[in-house]
Image (cartoon, rainbow, N blue to C red):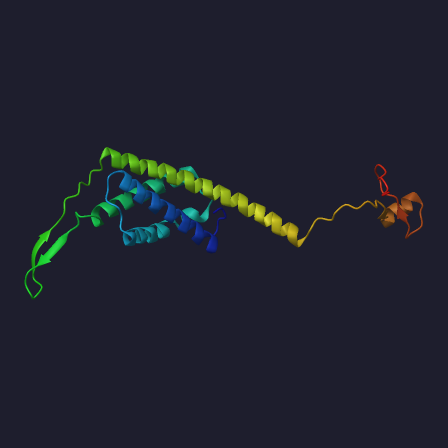
Length: 195
């Protein structure tokens, strides 16, 4: 995921950051005792976090820059899952054929997080940061390796040969007193001759 700037690279890095953060926030919410999240709600939160992660992914991901963002994302996902998810959401019932609302009942969900919920979200934050930084570094190494391999593939390095005689440059021909167009023997230890 390494590679600053914009374009496709930043969009892919932002998608990776948003996906990992939303997935681990949802898992942390369930581990802390919350209701399992609805897929549509997670996708909506992923879209919001994708937009929010756009400025973050323009530089290599570091733990100190990810920590405040990941904590804020965990809080946002927790609040969204607590308010918009589960059996405690607002229900409206009608009894008239004209659609008049007769009863509105709002569910009861404690907005103060419990200790297990807080710990599970903190653990999800730390795992998300570690995973994001590790994946970013790994992709950077793989990208560097790939660029090196493609450069070597396009312009292969000359293989050494057993013949060490080279054409003498003009200035060395004059220095050795040889005629132009003759080859000088190569320098170094003698090579074994093929049998």
